Each structure stands twice: as C-alpha cells, then as structure tokens.
Length: 118
Image (cartoon, rainbow, N blue to C red; front, top):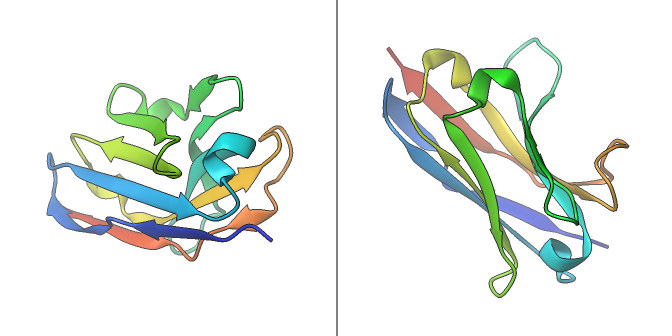
C-alpha cells in the first residue's frame, strides 16, 4: 500500500511563491508516475502538473510558466514549485501516484491547502 503525504501549503498574497512537497512510502517516486492535482470548493479535482516514469511532464495551461514539477529520488519526494501565484490558484492540492497517469491514480495524499489573496 502506497502512502503519500503533502506539505508546504499556506496563505500567500498574489505574486508570491510556495513549494509543495510530497513524500511517500514504497520508493514511490522511483516506481510510479506522480502528479499534483487541486480541488477548489465546487469544481471537480483537476490535474495541475504530472510527471510520468520516463520524466515526461505535463502542465495545465493556466499554470504553464509559473509552476514546476520535480522530484528527488534520493529523498523519495515530489515537489511543486509555484511562482507568481494568483487568487484562482486557491485550492486543496493533492499529490497522487499510479503506474501511469493516463489512468486515474489509485494513491492519494490527504492534501495541503493553498490560499492566495489579492
């Protein structure tokens, strides 16, 4: 059973930066494709940035150029560097893992809240 835990959320003003971290069990960063997802009140959970096992990354259009997904295999940790944050980035952010993110992930963390004020 894969366990994931996010950290690094918080409250910032628009234009600020945050770095989210996701640590996991079972050498998850080495053995799974991983991604960051977010959910604001009401809308469905949406993919923000993903990284497949081969290193291929994808970003939703609204975060391109502002967010960067990366991983540290030695620390078994996935990161999301978020710059130039906007109020519309406010959401609960989750990391997830699956053998490929072309299918819905099975493994999810509990989430970390990001709040951006204008």
